[in-house]
Image 1 (tube, rainbow, N blue to C red):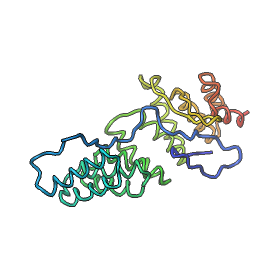
Image 2: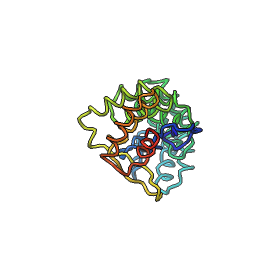
Image 3: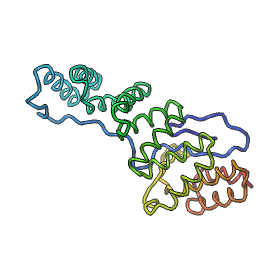
Length: 247
């Protein structure tokens, strides 16, 4: 069963390999919102902008994010060239799982600057959660070219599997396995007891390699990769399930 990062499952075919519903690498990607600090509103702003900025600051301070969103819109209307305010709005929509709006705001930022990493990240996660995996992959690819981030490459590999682009997924997995920092990275995976357990990212990548091999009718290589994953983590559920299908 191929499952998106958001946990959205597609219809499963008999004996189809299992891709873990990978939530996120334990070093999360999403951009953090701008925290308004007390007395942080610049004094040089005109009266109206200062009013909206203070409104935003107080709303964040008092944990009223609906009012904070309204204040962001006010600030954007009065100062439409300020990308940081638009980014804060995109983050708001992402954090509240309003993915269509998050994507639309991110696309506005990308029209201004196609290499805006925060906007690419929000667009990628938004498309992913909406099930638009090809657009999510495009955004992650652009982000990877900018940052060379292994967590981003991992997401690329998983989406390539989701889209049945097995050769590309295997190539991405090979780059990850050869990376010098790969063994410092972890993946959080939901276990049968409803708790999340961290596994070495290498384990999940070997499972991906096995899936790519199996989907290309190479059962010998697939079995090898699943066994390698289980040698590192005997309780990793996807590799156990996939190996059972190969035997």
